[in-house]
Image (cartoon, rainbow, N blue to C red; front, side):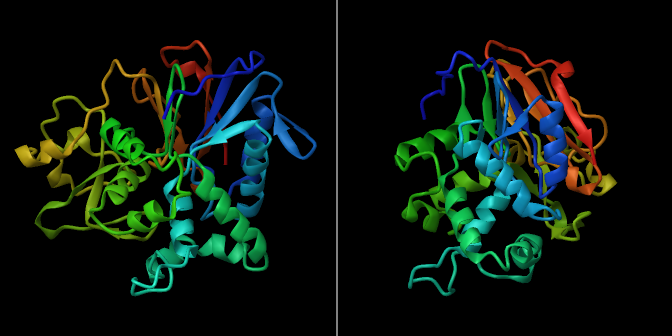
Length: 324
């Protein structure tokens, strides 16, 4: 995908906003704090645009309000948005599968996925036409955005996977039926692209170990950093809210494990991601990487970063947030 350039000289910068998960009132409060005003039922800023990092839905009490706020902004050219893994799950959960599948929808309706999407399904129960329209809108959203001076993706910027996606020539969204269908089939190129860009990098826990997250789900893998140069141990790469067993932290990485990792370089463009449920005072990961997911729906913070069109390096003082 070619780089996006701001064709409107009145736009002096962008406000990049982390995972909202149905916290509609918190979103309104953050937009007000950033200087956006509601005009004709749409939040707008006289000189800036918002960029949303995905995961508007699930968990919170104001999912429809959240989606409506963001959708109106995107459709009225007051904002951009990249798709998150929760929107992807909603799409595959709701899209009929071809006859060759052993199930009626692309995503199996397992207890796990029903629990993940439970709040969303419940809040749209009496608004089925609106829900179908919302799913189609989700499918129109880009997987990533690249501007002259920064990049945006929900979980992980992997240039090889992005190049693979571009080579498929299906656009920068999930609008292509063949790509979407292939994306739910393990080990296909579309599946590998989706897993990396929307869910990040991870590593299997050794020796059959599992961890139970704060969300109640049991996992046999842990999320890993995609920017760590020359890691040596598990503690160098672990990046998630749920702790792995203490005795694993000093475990040395094998050659095969190191080869599974990718590295987003220090000289790359500034990158913005969400996805990772950070806690504590918002802070940059590095002067060219910011994760803006600070667990808003779990009594955390809804965080934005204000980047101007000519910024080249990130600045801690540009982080803005409201607390839940």
